[in-house]
Image (cartoon, rainbow, N blue to C red; front, side):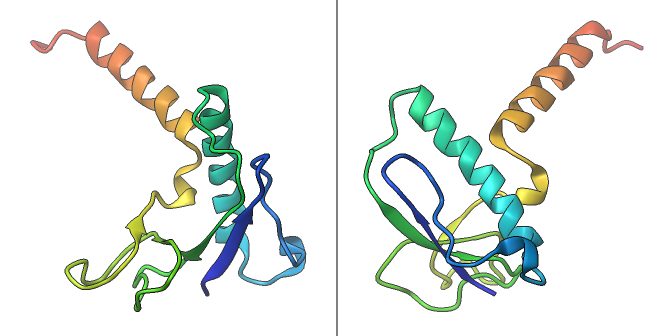
Amino acid sequence: QPARLPVDEDGRIVHSRDLAKDPGSAKQMLMDKFLRDTVAILQRTGRWPRKWMSFLMVYTAAGPHRKEDFPVFGFGKRDPRWQPGLLVPNPFFVTPGWWDDMIADQIEESEARPWES
C-alpha cells in the first residue's frame, strides 16, 4: 500500500494516522527510521533544504505503476524500463549509518586477514 510521506522544514515526518495501530505498517515505520537518519545526515552536513517536501512511497516489490506529478520512491520495480520512481534501499536494511558501520567492519576484517589464508 503506497503512502504519502510529508516532511516539514525541520525534517520532521508528519503522519495523519497512528502507525502503531495500523496493520501492515511495519515497512512504513522502518522507512520512517531510515528517513529520519537520512534527514539527520543532511542536516549535520548542511545539505538539508529547510523546506516542506512530500513524496509517495510504494512499499511493494512490484514498485510504482504510473507516473505522478510528485516524487515517487519504491523498493523495487518489476520492469524498470517503463516504471517511474526512484529506487531506494528497503528499510529492512536499517539506516545509512548502520550500513556505513557494517562496511567499515567488513573492510577492517578483510584487511586484517591475508588473502593467502
